[in-house]
Image 1 (tube, rainbow, N blue to C red):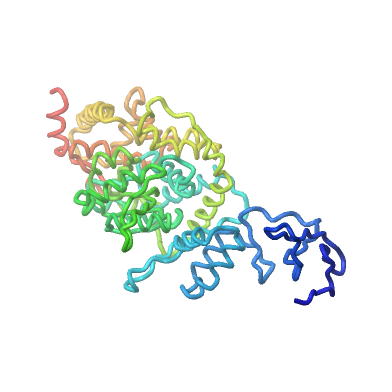
Image 2 (spheres, rainbow, N blue to C red):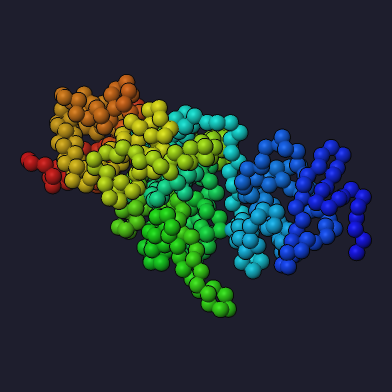
Length: 481
């Protein structure tokens, strides 16, 4: 073989501006091999090294991350990927099997060509650093704008949305349970809003366990399961998977392929469970429960339009940026928790308290207020409800037993001596709570006794209110004559 001596000498390679010593390669006998080509490219020494996880495509100067490379390869046809596989694995410095697994996770799912492939694109990060407290303020305000929620719920949902973007930073991902006693209470609109501000939302009204764990394993979605009361009670395997998926590292094991090889599928994923009534006990224990009640159109500040979600899309990108920038801090955060928060209740709320602590601003106080409102124990609720019934009976006695609007009842409760309802209902100037939240709180407490508000006419006005006769059974059962 002829030796190429045009630009090379033994052990030395030259170009127009620089030279570099190259050590001769050695064979197993220790003899120096002839250098036919020197494959090592020369980079100017004044350029900084490329960080790990960042690649420069060989055909261009475009810098790409590993994740972007996997996404690009996932869009190739099987034949194109097979031809590029070996070179791309070598360029990334990983095994071909590792590359196969990363690309497979990003390929759209299909069922032998039937139906539509599942494609859950990643969130595009906001280009600038984000103030955590500010973006949480804005997210909470979107829920308050379009929904009538119980006190603390908008803040809890905003924090839960942020947690969905940083789910991998936490040991547990609490299920968010949207529960109502009847249809038409805003569960669907709440899910619609959540979907606009969470990563890779996957919404469905029915699902099987095998489909669930394959979706979670390949796409890491935010699960938005609606109408769960219609199928979850009968789906024991699905309930078990949702229970297990509450904790990081949870997997479903299945035999796959002709050889029946056992494979592990990831099951850890954030999930919203929406339905009428209460969840099965094991799932409820792993959930942050938001109780929703029906509301009149006039109680809404603005109707949500799913065709115009530009603001929500920006907030989603900002949440993604903030959680990425603060991921390490969230991982190690051990937030201060209320004394009442222990065991599974603490597991459910710890991610929200951690996010509030790292975000700063007024959020440490707001998460404690949300926790207090949404985790009132059954015994406390019963005692509070009986006290509320006694005060309402007194109000009816003062008004002569006439029907009363929700707004009038709230104002009369606020005006009672001692101001014992001012924290729950807010002061008359709205300093502690909006009127809509006060109506929701009142409706939730009275619903426990089978009492609901109705649209009625009082004078010339058509309003939501209560008939005294509806309270008679509750007065007889729970109060002294």
